[in-house]
Image 1: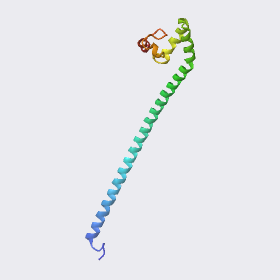
Image 2: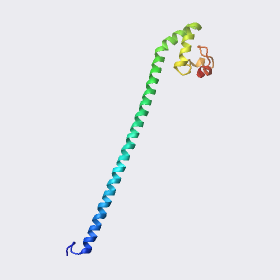
Image 3: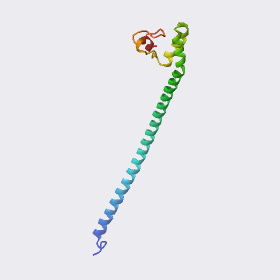
Image 4: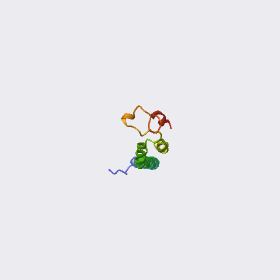
Length: 128
């Protein structure tokens, strides 16, 4: 017995073939749409990651630049503090809180409860 011998078999096979092709086209179109959407989301994610990385790099560079300035000024700060002369210490003491965002660098244990030699108490220097 042949498959195409009867009209009923031919109609059934034609309908089945049409259904399979229609489903295949629908799956293909959905696949293309989902792939395009995923690629767009990936590009947005990469752009956002690039922006965050650039911000992090900038922040890190600023941090290292500030640290380098403080290390470079360390000998000047120590020398000025050793003189105990207010006129010598004052210009450097005014510059340090701006560079450190108000943190007082005079942190020796003996001075923990006393004003810094720069003339500011720890609380006052942190508000500058």
